[in-house]
Length: 107
Image (cartoon, rainbow, N blue to C red; front, side):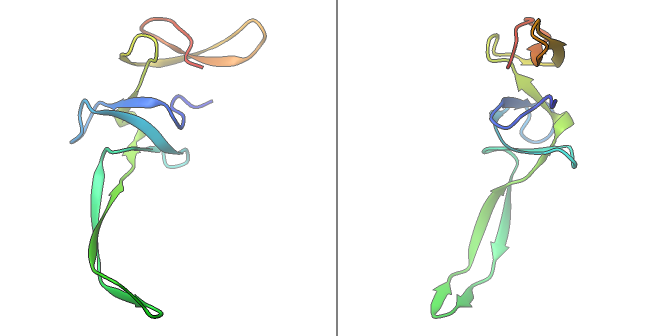
């Protein structure tokens, strides 16, 4: 089970976007990276190109770059703080994430 999942709200704890919050768009498990909407925005310059009879002008594309998972912390939905995540088993045997600050279940 992952500590951070798609759709979770996270807070950046290191880097140029320090203290900013946003929802997770993508989790790249093998690379240990997450893409957060509106944070760590990069720019890419594209040349003008011809596709068939259509002309696409030159433009500057903006995209969300991945952040390393160690540079973000999960924001607890109940206490609204950036917190560490723990795991525990419920009585029925299911594994759930919990907030280490307020001890409430996240899932």
